[in-house]
Image (cartoon, rainbow, N blue to C red; front, side, top):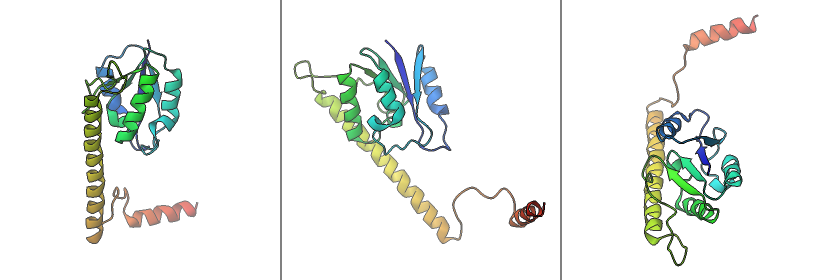
Length: 177
């Protein structure tokens, strides 16, 4: 039984440092790591992401997929349920080590029907909706803050490392040889 670790960041300015810390604290033995290229879109369905697809091809019944938190893998309710169906079909466990979903058995099925337990489905949908709300509010607040700053004549982003005159002088010197 293999321990399969999945990691992903949304942009190339982010790092997996936090995920590495959470997963290291989990003490996962002999992990096989699948890490998406930085910037692999969270809008892309998890089952279509290159490294997660590779992980699923590699996985065997009895293996466990480890993620630091659910939203490193999925964003919306539909995606979560799709991934859980595939993991159940392939008899692969899911272990989430941090966040709202940590410590929950998201693969629990009804003993007679084999369907996802209603309580598990409800919790997944509720927590996923809360996660989507948090992300949407953060995006709205960021947008509003940038618009307010722009209205005051400020622009977003990092301040220039050099003053405008210095940049002009350096550019002229460079072009002059």
